[in-house]
Length: 195
Image 1 (tube, one colour):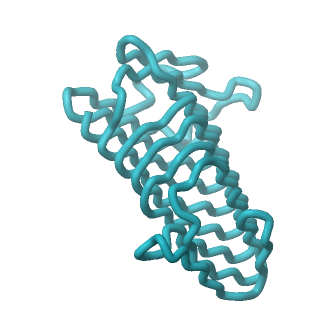
Image 2: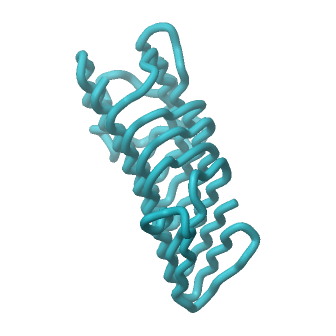
């Protein structure tokens, strides 16, 4: 599988590993979404974002994926909660507006993450480059890192890297065993924590 693309506004979803590709819908129907599934890509896009739902009947999709590794993951979450039981890809592009994203067992080469007012929690490994941008939300990354090089820019927010906290500053930390900074962290009024 080359590409997985998920774009939801008010639908919660969970991605887990399964023996076969499968979609399960709760409090919603397949007709509310644009879905493309073929050998090279899976696309899920919420189409009826203005559909009225009762607050206790939140639409939810469970996605079972048999693939071991994907080339590119593109995920956009507006006001939803997204949970990944595992995520293994070469490149990940993730945007969280006001929703929440939880990724367990992350393994990727590069991770581009933008967080508006939402919450994003990542656990796992980033092999090469990570670009995190946080406006007013929260980003937490914990896991094994190949290198500890980073550069950061923070306004009135807070960035914490391995227990060291930074606010209203720019800072670079260079690991001499690494050619370029691994983490590029930008924070306006939110919080980024790396441990």
